[in-house]
Image (cartoon, rainbow, N blue to C red):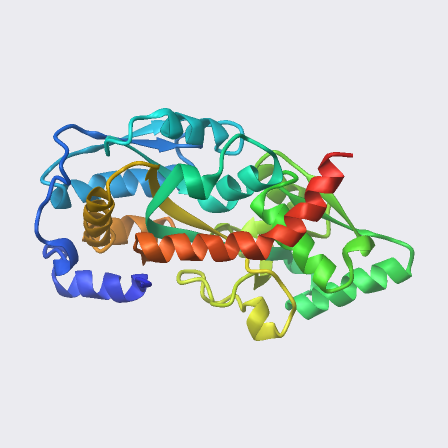
Length: 332
């Protein structure tokens, strides 16, 4: 089930920002009596951390006032955080809020001793970050087809188009590599890895590269200098909905997004998973969650445990061929 944020905002305003949705109105502690630790594989202040803290602020009403405490465990493409959750007792007191694009890919690209679908249980999805192809406004490029034609023209003139991303093996790297390969221009480009989204974007702003891969939610802040020409998705982003998808433009691509999910270590009871997923369903419709994610331009998308697991399995299957080829280059 997808939660349309704008409908929720309208609903919350109509209710005077005081009435909670009935999706999980009944309080239930899910069988626990202590605070839930929420491990986040990034530092404080980032997008994933923001989702976790906004959730922690709204969910106690649906957990019989049991609080969630966010613990940041950055490092190693969320591997450090995954290991901490994996080592925890499956008693419901430790969960993880994860950007699953990077987390899942990190376990597929290298042997981390982690099999995500065996070692974790997806409780629910709460959001999603869509990947976009971004160019400088002054380039005059406005569509994905125009970007492809620009790449081809430069190559015909003896020049490979450089593009930036936040590290080889990242969601952006895998998604754009698949896009370039499917459209026959991979060898006409040169990828330039950076550390993080800020450096990736600065390389584009400075003209060091011709285009970049970025979370589409980051683009509006640079609307006078950057243009997103397409997102690697079947559906438009719920928040930045002015950017056409690759599917709309008739361009070959592999769906590449980073679902933001709540996960628990394998071994937690089915009853706990169902209970916490129900509490999360109520929390993401809470006016505070809706308003704060809206301000951060973060998409709200809810799926229950079964739906989230199926969605992640589909993404892993779609990514596998590109990850295999990227892994071969990393091992060289």
